[in-house]
Amino acid sequence: MIPLHPVTDVDHACPHCHVRLGVKGWYIPGMRNLAELACSQCGREFYGDLPAGHGLHYPMLLEKATGVVHDRVSVPWFSEWLYASYTQRRSEPLNLHVEEYKPVRRAVLLNCLDFRYGHCLLKLLNAQHYLDRRPDLGLIVLVPRYLRWLVPEGVASIWTVDLSLSRGIEWNDWLGQEIHRRIEELEECYLSVAFSHPHPDDVAIEKFTRVTPFPVHEWEERLYRPTVTFIWRGDRLWIGAPSDGIPEGEIGSSSCATLEQSLKIVTLATRLRKRLPGLDFAVAGLGKPGGLPEWILDLRMTTPDEEAERRLCQRYARSHVIMGVHGSSMLLPSAHAGAVIELMPEERWGNALQDLLLRKGDLREALFRCRVLPLTLSVDALCNVVVSLLDDWTGMLLHMQRKWCLHESGLISSAWVEAREQLHRRRSLRTLTIVTINTESPEERRVRGESLSGAADCSAGTLRELGHEAYDFYANDEALQKTWMHEHRLRVQGAQPSEPNAALLQHVRKAAEAPVRHFKDLIRPVLQALDSRHSWFYEILSTQIGHHQPDVLLVRDAGGIKGDFLKEIKPCVRLLVGQVTSTLPGRDELGCYDLVIASSPDAVAQCRSLGVRAELLGSAFDPQELVALVRQYL
Image (cartoon, one colour):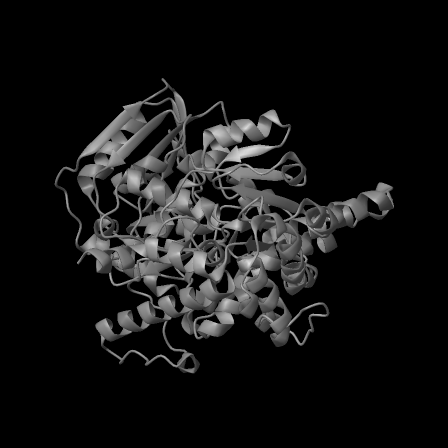
């Protein structure tokens, strides 16, 4: 902390006489925290930066009489800001809204005014240090209106200045006098050093945004819906990688460059979607929404308010990975997301990490979750990095997390083995193999398809979109089933020719002509022949189940498969599910299933009364059938 009132202490030397300048007082007319100084030898008067914010690293001196800035550390941008604000200083009143929460006599002032959004936010994050470690001092926070929503609870007072970001550089004498008047009413006041990049150990972002960051311990559990967010920035674009096969934006053409960035984002999202079928992809940040595919969530906005800002933080906190071009727009996203990828322009490498809010914790974990890559990175390369982050995080922990690397911990080998097995189990649950058996005949399937009623064929496609392996088999369609066997270079050992042979036809004719009393004897050979002809049914079905080894086997008609067969194949599947659509099958068949699903509450109740686990699955509508309905009724 810097002593401010009643006595100000700062060390500056006269640039002409090279003697220590005397301190006459202090002055805060905006973003600059200044000491009023005078030289005892030449009599010149100066304003000098107090060691707060960037003034800690780049202390400047300004001569009151001439406006000349003495920059002994050679940082032109900081000295030019001081010169411009002083030569264009203003004195009209500003809207200063004061909120008092605690009466204080001793306080520390945290000045968060600045010309850059990131500078303002980073200064504000210093508030937590004083709230946690200096309860003896009341914290006064001076903020621009657009940051008011981020001020944490527990402060003594909030002084909100209605000053836009573009005017953040402004020197306002009215504001300087008003701040001076209010501070002088206190017995004692310090100025916060307001580090330009506070340490992660001193910041818990949820105290500022009221949004809990992504729970990295739930990384695997949340991978059923991998969530990725691209942070849009209109003035610093992701362009310049010709290997993507996307036309580069023309130099000086902002519209072409913006279009190039949009094309690259859509291309990236599309390629990620193919590799991560359940992908939730969004674009967020400052910008005009529109122009993206409907399946990409467009969260861009031109003038965000407090509620919109908090909703964006909630989106970041749901994201496994956020990515974007280097800049202050990455601060809040990086603080909330599970992992971050920053694309760095060539001229900004010296500023790497300045716009990222990393969590405290293990160094190797932080390095894994934070990637700083060249802006010229291709779409394919960035896609590979994202997929790797999503897939390899938990495995990295098992190899590198501190608790698994302690020599003296007495780690029992069984504990490590159990952790490893849990990892493999969680990984295996990311992608389930789901096989659906339909027992209807080809004719029944045709009729159902034309009527647009009954069990839909969309489940496999939907499950694939969620990242699972899904297959539909039509067990009663001999042609399809034998085609599957042929494609997999397998033979059906017990199959008979699909055409009825002469002997079979002769039995059928005799049965048709014989008296009813002789029908049973004559029809028996027909039934035996039919059973023989359908021997391929279970042989192919068992081959398919053995080939895919499904996690879930769903039988569309729970009574369409013999109980003996279900008992034989049950050890090969994790979960055997039967669906009841009309008539309830017998107890022998139902008892083979781990779960029965039905669209009728009565059917569910009947199953449960038989001691069978059953759940209600309501009727649904396949959106793809809407086109067929429209065509049918036009």
